Image 1 (cartoon, rainbow, N blue to C red):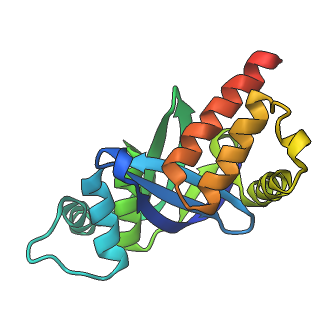
Image 2: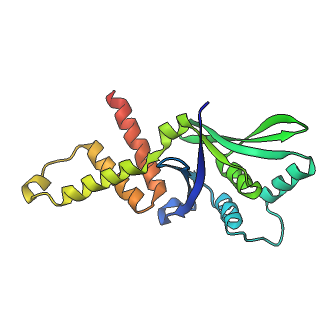
Image 3: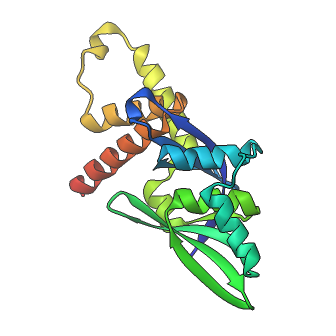
Length: 197
């Protein structure tokens, strides 16, 4: 399995998200972004560690880190390796007593552990191909959208295809850093393109 290293680009939310956040991972040596929708608790756990804020009592992910330490285990990395029916799957890979092991995990929990232990985060190439959003493509789409705004009046009335409208909305969502909306639009575009083939 080909793996691509990613970093945390940010956490974002929108008023319509119902308390959900988008964890945005960015390719270290590339331009793709991977938004993953996570819960408020997990977002808080990641944000607290990124900001180096120590809660008065250990949180769940602190406990997991301390448990690895107590049993002599070491988290080597985390891997987001699968996307099934819109749900991401991850593994926390670790060594204990010289043996390489892994635990299945939600990506949000795996990332919360990774930031606590300083472990690198990887995404499989297949997942990035399916769900990643190329930023340069979004920039091109934004240029198309802005150039279409400068068209003469008679051309503006020409109907756009559904695909073009979705692509323009995707570019806008990315430029506004509304990654939850971008992920939803990306999925709609993929379904539309898949049904055309």
